[in-house]
Length: 76
Image 1 (cartoon, rainbow, N blue to C red):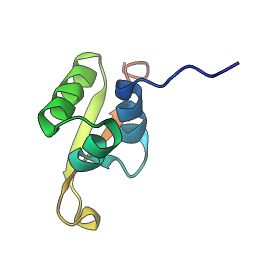
Image 2 (cartoon, rainbow, N blue to C red):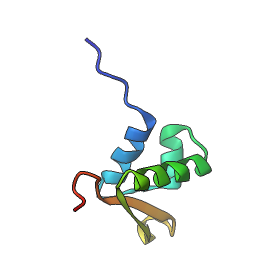
Image 3 (cartoon, rainbow, N blue to C red):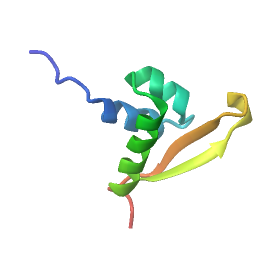
């Protein structure tokens, strides 16, 4: 039996839940979306209750890194 195909938004969420987070560029590469579509997906995740932290991380050459710090299930 084959496992279900992972949706692109689930892939984005998974990348954002990693301790290292993800840049818009990395999310674009992983999904095949343009930058404005990735930013819209981030907005959708926020509306779904996720708390997304944005930082300018020097390890990523000054690019903005996004991370989910609280998921919709863990928000109180």
